[in-house]
Length: 461
Image (tube, rainbow, N blue to C red; front, side, top):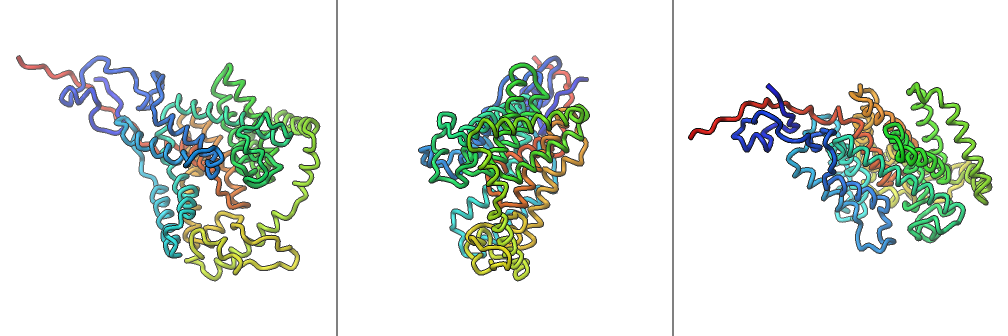
């Protein structure tokens, strides 16, 4: 007796047409919606909508500079999720504690927000969506949207092309070659922050560095899984990702990329032998960039020796600790730190007070100061039970092992900015949770059910 795979249970279209009894013989070609790669030549519309949402997510907060009346990323994500929900062949989720923890995190945050009496504040709503809701949705929905190898390869190719774009843009920004930079508003010093460093379409150097570092790791996975033109493009993207991360001049992200490369290199025997050569090549590439790009060396020295940003971090983090001590379970309310921090920031004896109207430069401290200790604990559990959980699991396939390794790099890219900045950036954070979700497919998606194919029922004359 043969079988047919049905991920969600119930009748397949074929069994429904035969009164619940599946006919013998071949029913259909393998269906990509069921995770069957052999016939995966077409990509569902919701996958393309999801990728389009990621593309416009790069411009989150800056859509008006593109001349668009409203942001397109959220409507595109919503449309993709609706189509995914309507797909009769979609897979089923396996129950995981992270879903309950994520729901509690959202509820606690909403309570903290509403308790401030500012329930109609749209900025706090966007903070909730971009910093909590969307990452959780990326983690849960990503494994279903990118359910097959072909779809995941498409995502890797998408990231490879973006990484090349970011690297070229970074070079154009630092070398003041406007013809290499698109869109043109990236070169406008009056928009965004951190002008003079590579900012890309994010108009800030930290998310640019995060995106380039993520692109470095995803391109490395693509290079290991393909040959020919795409392998060459992936290797080029790794170089551009390294360059873009370096030119963003964010020290934590230099460390994140280095730490990710070293850990992955130690874990993979084939890379372990090449690790010294890779490090030497990176140092050589950096030296060539310093010689080839005018003005880069003094800019780099200035960035390495600056201490103002460190002072700002210390003073705001100290203010957050005072809030936690005074209001451990209530905090000052979701999104309220900037509005009240003048009451909590203190001038230190040895550290100059340069500014106070900035967020806490540590995400866990910010959660505790605004939503209470329980808010910080819940958010940390979301990461530990979500993307980080795959690191201690057994991977079922070599491809899954590759995604697990990319998740290691992505978690370094997430961890250091999370400990040293507000890390409010939609695109890199969404990608980190998406990568973790895809790597966790074997943990998040229920096994397919096998339905026996019975002989077709004979029609009575």
